[in-house]
Length: 371
Image 1: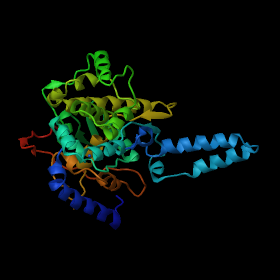
Image 2: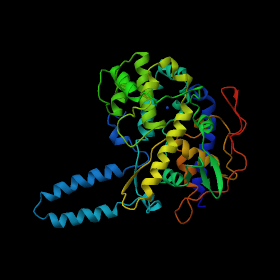
Image 3: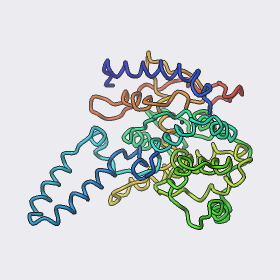
């Protein structure tokens, strides 16, 4: 694996800073604005959308010019030249889109953390650990590589012949969100949609930014705040799709704010991830498919992958939930350590025992992860 002295110093700094900050910042892992979500909705796709917009804009200008043939040729040459490392790493990959957006969600989190009252409201719903996500980055090439190695039927990431389990319990150990006794019901989707939208005087599902703007600008009641926060959290972090609008399947579960903590959100996040991994792999297998959709909690997927890789002398802290460590630039820099000299991601030696085994979250003993 390619590992420069500079890269090693970066991850050593991350280990030191994340381990220190997780002990005391934001009330010891207490449960992280852009007005235009379109501009920041694709951490996974990075800048390809903006590149395409710029390309189309320049092309339309050139079409109005008398020497359009020459200038169209120039812009095609410009388009070829705009290479990036991530394109080189995934030159065989199709363009992947997702509303998974830690950039947008991070700005919402940053705003929420300016108010102790708002932070307490989020904690009371059981989602306080999501406020740990400060300026977190998940590179698209790395996310695609991990997704390519998911065995949907086996509910696992397969690397070097080793199985990294994906299940609802692992979601709890990584994200620290509620795993109550009641499943998130999606049986009455239409009723949930109509009832939830009526709370905001709407009959049609608005953009995700509608709820984000309310959080950033308006002085909301406690219930309105939770409804908006949960909608943005689910749409951009936990259960994203390729749409710019919130999914209506989980709206019924948000109606009674007092019951949110009692629901099994871990199972929902797990099932959502598997559904969209299958969709992504199916789309990718089609030769004529130009673009693919990478939905689900990509952050969770990448953390599971990195946590099971052995980084040798760089020992990862065993703090739980894992979201308390995997924040900031940690995923990006540790992911880069999996890039070989041929600029292709490859797994390191896999751990025999994982940091999440036989630990505790909020003082409650957790069972060993099934493998």
